[in-house]
Length: 249
Image (cartoon, one colour):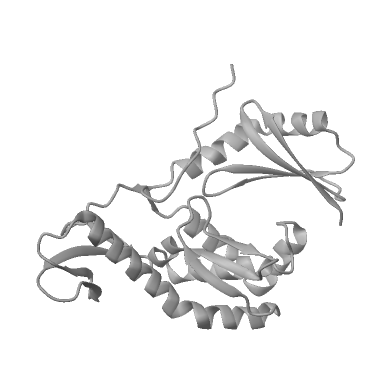
């Protein structure tokens, strides 16, 4: 299937347009930032695409508003009593200042951070961020191995990093997937969904019908998990959202 890409601005909203050998035009609004993507038949010119988008403008803005209104956590101050998420569970933080090795551990419904007396907020945050990465590194090898076999793709290299607008990404050239470190805060099903999503892209580069069919086949409940992930609380410190589009005038 041949494709061609373009970018249009319609009533102040940026639109990514991908033209394909398809019969009908499809409009999607994608989390977390509300990016708008149009898959359009090659027979449609820019004016026809604009008209189709304008007709769905109210729906597009509603979807973007819902995504941007998703619950966000205020910036964490790293003090005892505030809440943090670990694998989808909301835990209370307890900061323990004492001599010895600084580390993080779980104790029932509490998240314990052991730090030296007078430790800074930044030190505590870096310690917790490193611990979140360790949680991901502990489960990723078996997860990637299992799903690479199910989807029938060579097992890729994988890495974890902070990502401001995506939960995951892939590089076909490097045969590598990247996972957002924030996934350690979400339910384990969400991490699994992102792994499957990125692995599927090695077979289907776009989010077209073949990609959807593949996801439906290997993970029938992926839509529910995707919604759970994209409407879960976001960490305001690590996510960047574009300015809301101007109202039509």
